[in-house]
Amino acid sequence: MKAITFAAVFTLCVSCFAPAENAQLHGAVTSSSQPVPGAYVLLFDYSQVSPLTAQKWELRTTATGEFKIRIPAGCYDLFVSAALFKPHSTRVCVQEGELKQVKVKLSPDPIGYVRCD
Image 1 (spheres, rainbow, N blue to C red):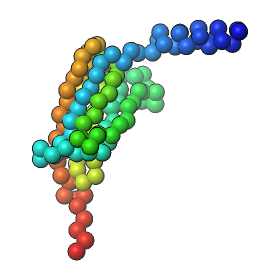
Image 2 (cartoon, rainbow, N blue to C red):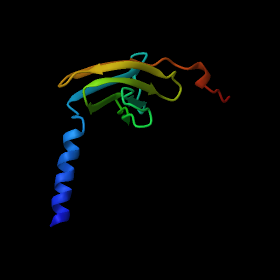
Image 3 (tube, rainbow, N blue to C red):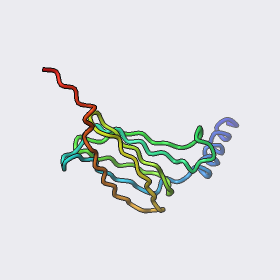
Image 4 (cartoon, one colour):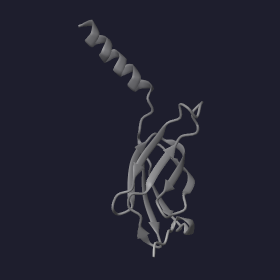
């Protein structure tokens, strides 16, 4: 019984100090007006005390080149990369309760193309 009580109190205390993920970031990754499916998306919170403990989120775009994520309010560095495209980075800030829309346009990387004739 003591273990269950401790677990419940510990969970309650941890949730009190964990940042609420009450903002949303929706994005679309395109190139030449075409969606880029499977692009790697990294959202990194550099405002943390140490880069070793900084919060990060990693995900992939859908078949339509879109991604959606719930995050705490704040400013983040957004990195997007995909095979055959130059990587893209930008700073994104979201406020509490905000739904932020982001459009990322990737440029083809000529070095990434290999011709096998």
